[in-house]
Length: 241
Image (tube, rainbow, N blue to C red; front, top):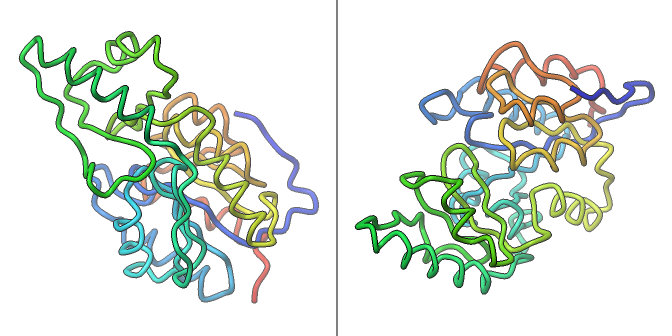
C-alpha cells in the first residue's frame, strides 16, 4: 500500500468503480453505498461512476442513484460529462473486433462459444463471460496489440493506452477540475490507474492484492460496506457546497 500525504488535502469529488466496490458479494447494489453517494451529491460533491459497463447502463445507473450524470464506461473507452452532453468515445474498437474474431475461431475449434456481453451497445471495448481461461486468451492474442482486462466479473478487450485512469484525467481536465481533488475507490486490477491518478486512492477490503498495493488506504470492510467506510474515513476532507 502506497501513501500520499493528507496535508492540505481538499476533496471536491468522488470517482468510483461499480461492481465489487459499491455492490455486495452477489453484485447487488449496496444501499448504504448509494446513500453515501447521495449525501455527497447533496453536499455539492461531483460524483463520477466508472465501470466496464455500457453507456446506456451507466446512464440508467446515474439516474437511479441520483448523480449529475457523469460517467466513465467500457473501462475508459467512453465517457460523458453530465446529462446534457453526448458520450465521447476515446477507444478504438477496430483492434478489439480483430482480437474477438481470433478468439471466437480459436475456442470454437474446441467446441466453446464465447458468451458476449452487450456487443450491440459497446462502442470502444468488447466483453465476454469468464467461461474461458484468461491466460489462454492472452496467449492467443499475444501478437495482436490489444489489452486483455480481467475485471473479476468479465474479460474485456480494449485498445492500447485506454484505461479508467487515463480517461478520468482527461475528463476532469475538461470539467475544469483536478484529479488531486478526487477520492477514487475500486477493487480490481483495472481500477489501479484510477486509484493512482486521484488525490486519494482507496481499495475496498475485497480488492485484488495489486489494487490494494496501489491504494493509499484499504478499508477493513469489503464491497459496499468498505466504500461507506472510505467515505466516512475521508469525510472531513470534502469541501461542502
